[in-house]
Length: 242
Image 1 (cartoon, rainbow, N blue to C red):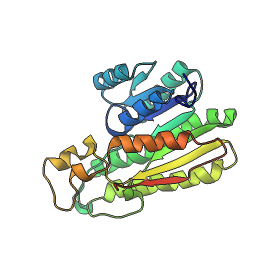
Image 2: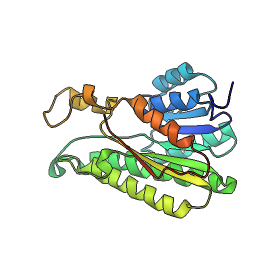
Image 3: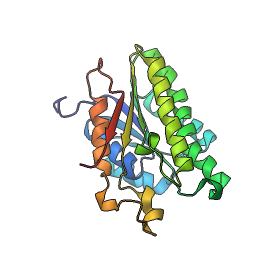
Image 4: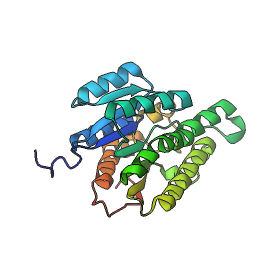
């Protein structure tokens, strides 16, 4: 098949949170562009089923990214399966909960920051040395409108996403000229299962899910940035519903 139709043929992409929502859409889109995808997510059965649907060598690695030991184990398994550092790492897995700061359980705050910020750092730290040795790679970070705007009851989520944007900016500075590209994709609200707990009790300050971006729109953006010419880096891409 023409490389124009499969521009990522021969490349490997690791996607976190890949059993549903943006992660699943990204895994499908990257596989459709020719990449082999390694899919990380918590639910073993659901993840295996989704990888089976993608086919073409999609690898399912059950992993709770908030568990550092599990991340290390999954990363080692991924390295063994693909034999090298990935060409693309999509840090997408996310946790979300709404509560005023003085009413949020400390464990919930720690879990959200662990999933949204600490886990991406751990995965980058694991795979970046191999990318440096190769002199090529692409780190894609899925941010949010909440990585630059403040909303009530978003104390944990905003703190994690602001921190994630800062981590991206530091990586971009440190990796400039290395051959490794870094991109932050910051979408507005996306219709994913992340909203399920909120949808069960509709609120007037949150837009209806029918007005949100589709997960496929974010996946299209991921494929777009990773298929630019090697000398082109898209530092940041913000997405909103037209």
